[in-house]
Image (tube, rainbow, N blue to C red; front, side, top):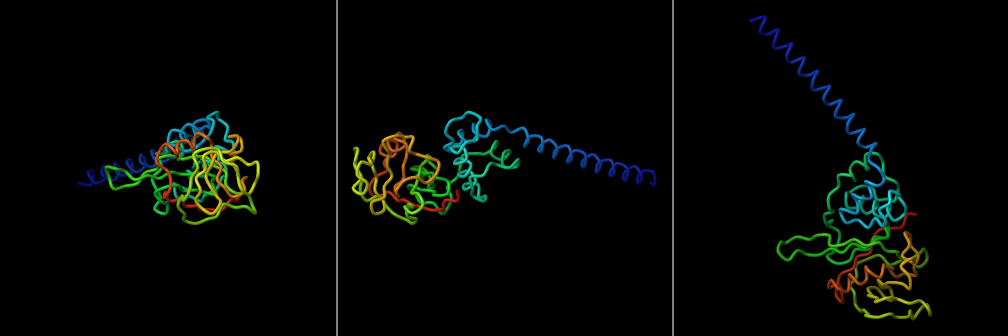
Length: 231
């Protein structure tokens, strides 16, 4: 009996040592994996899951940081446009498609922090909401900020329109949601900068505005403007 108890204790000690070694090895593997997550893999993962990453070229530029900012928002992390930590790199590499946050509206959600627009839709077959599309955008610059709050699109013009407030400033297919503030395309997509640059409106790519027009976003659609630009 003593020999049997001795064997059991010895086996238990060996098992504990083995588990400790496996845990240490696993931690080392995860640490190595975090180090190995390249900039290109981060961009590819963000693009695969629908975040507006811009060009996938292995460079974490300001467009990529916009997508990282949105990923942090939808992941419940501290929202910023900073470069990702080693831990965040691993999480981004294995991220899945974003789920709708409870505070967002079914409609257009404009983040002044991330300089983005997220279209949330309702499923026709299930009583649930889903992220339909994410877009890059450029909101109002300091002194001309896009107003925060809950609104609805109240007017839209399906053609080029010159601004009443800024003569010569052309708006492509604008959708107005708050006073004279609208979502619209500009004379050039190059004006959709990764920071606040407009006089209150929300600049979007021509292709993004076309998408909104062709996917039922119109008068009555809810619009939520939230967050603060942190530079």
